[in-house]
Figure 1 (cartoon, rainbow, N blue to C red):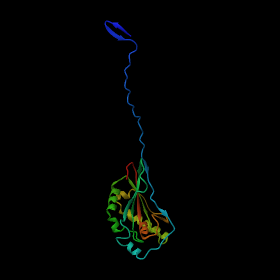
Figure 2: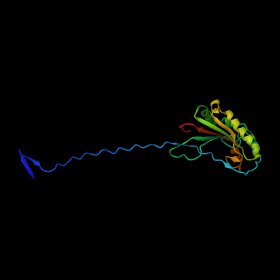
Figure 3: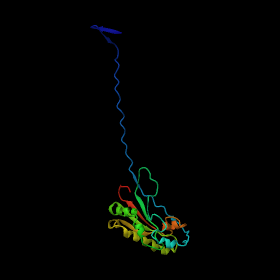
Figure 4: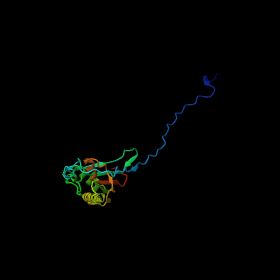
Length: 205
């Protein structure tokens, strides 16, 4: 129904209201999870089982080539997990000659070893523990001195700054090995020194 006012028709009743578009939802702020540091332990074994050296094993162990290639390996054990910073790694210098404490020239000349020694010296956030190992052949109480001697000789290869950040230079506990002693290669892997290195801040390694 219309009422004529001055010749103009005006609608009666409520007028339709304009629709005001709604504001887009504002995402709620989220708190990102702080990454956690995690230091996965290097896998080791404890064993009383031992095997004797094979013919020529001792002689070959004392050559430059030895039984293993390469002599220096970097190990980051454990799986990489989300929101986790791995805060430690392990540099293994292996294939020492049987009953030898000194690091072979071939091992000290490997580029991987040189690169990490340089980083150990320049990266002040890194701290170290140096642990010596041996194979199972021989009386274990005598191998304590062998293990410690190997660790000390690796310590001497570090630069002055890196040596100041070494927390311990020790022999691995008795009857503790990196692997079993069932093969020539396994025994050569056990004749080793592990540089355990840890980061002291939020950096990753």
